[in-house]
Image 1: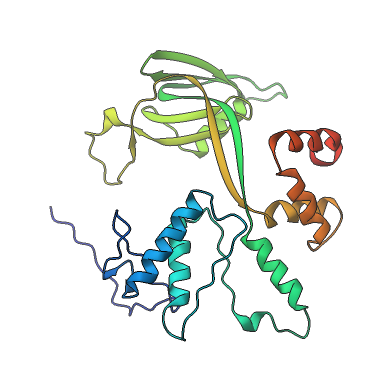
Image 2 (image 1 turned 120 degrees about the vertical axis):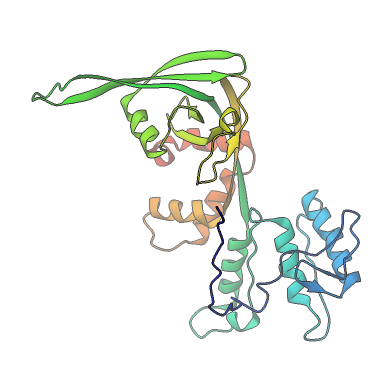
Length: 286
């Protein structure tokens, strides 16, 4: 049986002038390859940009700026976008042109400050206790409807999780059963359940089923080692996201400078954040 992929006959068009740039095109030693990642030439500039990327990743460029100077059409914007591609999606990158600054409606400083806020990112670290394993049993236990009538309701769910250390049965709330149905969890899937919130995430199919034939390509994951583990989750977000929520709490439609300053104070360090949240518990913990 031969399966061929039919390619579209529509003409491929570029989204923007630099949409083809995928990175700096450097090898493992930081030496520029003549044609790689959508860039051609400017080897010395690309190698210098690679050093800048290493400095940013090692957190040694905080509070500093980079000036790319040169005649028009020499690839300054392309190298800047390549640096952004090398850093990844979790590092916010906000391109802007000079014509955006000049406006009869908004001040120049306001436009610059708005773009600065967009370019500031936050990394939130959260530690959670999760149960993960391969689903060996999924049995909803039904009871008579307490309201009356002939229908039945799910009182709880019995789920069996298998890890490298053995098998364990968990009795879960009926609300988690709805999450299991949304994730389309079935026997043989590897899932994890957050102990506090009850959130369910399907990670993939157990690699013991990798020999099965399926038209849809499944992602096979290894069997977890332990049941209850403390997982450290890290989130990346822009400063404007919590600032917009703070503006709504303060009864404003648009983000003001006070909202940004208030949010910035929350992410100074763990002790300061905990102190501020405890003092303003009624405001933030609704």
